Length: 73
Ligand SMILES: [Zn+2]
Image (cartoon, rainbow, N blue to C red):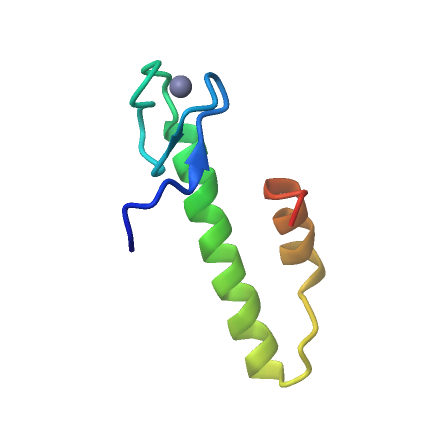
């Protein structure tokens, strides 16, 4: 992990590392933190499942949740 800003507050757009409270406007970002953790977990699950099957195919439910959490990716 680095301290490079990799996240922008959805309220004030301040670049910062992801944390539970915005450093500038003090917005509560705990839901954003949880969504990011969930996303990382889902991506890891997706990779593990694809490897286990050896076919590189996404689980449709996991793929749908990934799209919902991160539609731009
Ligand atoms: Zn903010």
